[in-house]
Image 1 (cartoon, rainbow, N blue to C red):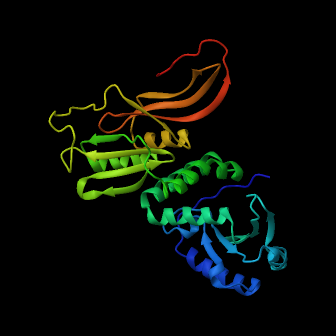
Image 2: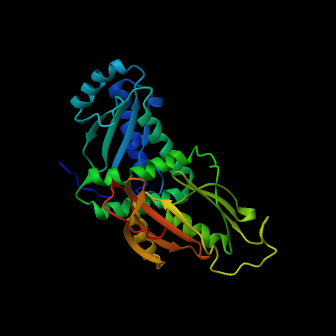
Length: 313
């Protein structure tokens, strides 16, 4: 049965609620404090979230999980089963805020990824802002379907986790921009990139979104390779950068709210590839200097039914 999605502004009482819950769980499960960790959005200061305290409990001996599960159930926690496939079991305690407790074996990938994502959000306010915007948009789209809401966040979370350990690709475009702060806000706040690293004194940022990587560098600050020839906007004529994004509709809504127009509206286009076609749901948008960006979602593949239009290619 689908669950309702309710996202509220950050409540500074959430860390205190975790401390109370953590103490109770220590006594109930006879575990050290180090085994009990606050995860999820309520663990990130300032982030809007469901009023639900997510708690990972790392169990040294997986063989004790059945006994610990019984203790939780006897204390009023509702068993929610194992949905991640690596031995993690969930339990829910309704309330305001509620609690969701996960019993995790010591080698749990689910637990590692939750901690990695939480730490990335805590360390990067731009990433946390983009996640807040995405959560609020998806809560509007899937207000009565918690499963779809959670699934729709998946690509963003995976991309953020990958971004914390991302290495540079063999080819990374560097865009010469006229206003570093304006371009940085466009790519981070509207498009959804996160900052992997930057040199503010040189007005330079290395950005990442999933497996996509991009550099922006202000003209005339630091080293500029083509400063012998003055650049006039729109820049990047003859080039458009295709970018896979986790949620195209959410990106378009962010652009609309910011009053940033599309160059071409959202379209579904199928491209020939050998004996089949691959589909993109895409649009075209210009950055503040005129560089063209083509964000898209993958529509999958199908058998060729005749000549497919080449669209923008």
